[in-house]
Length: 137
Image (cartoon, rainbow, N blue to C red):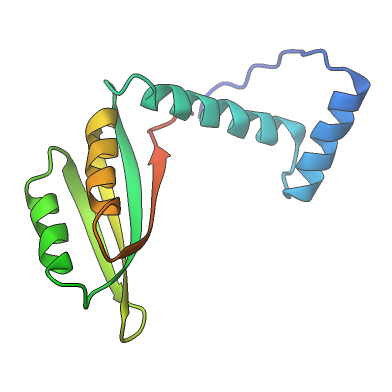
């Protein structure tokens, strides 16, 4: 277990009121938990900027599997990827649509490029890359 260090920050009263409002609305148990999450989120964002850091991400796509050669194109992009595909899930949402999540590890720019290649394919109805990194505790 990491040692917890206490420190003090100064906030204007209106900003503190907004902080407390967000803590309550989002169900945080304390201001500290909320602020820790904000710091982690900023650190992950910084890891992705510049594109030269190894990061992790999840690409979620919804597509019609009836589009000519779309499934093959998605497969080919994955096989030729310059990123490590850690896991891939595929769900048949209904007769027309499939949902996939592709868990990725690699350099930030390579993951973004990979995601854009798949997102731009005809028949892909939705694509969203969730950017993550291994956070500091």
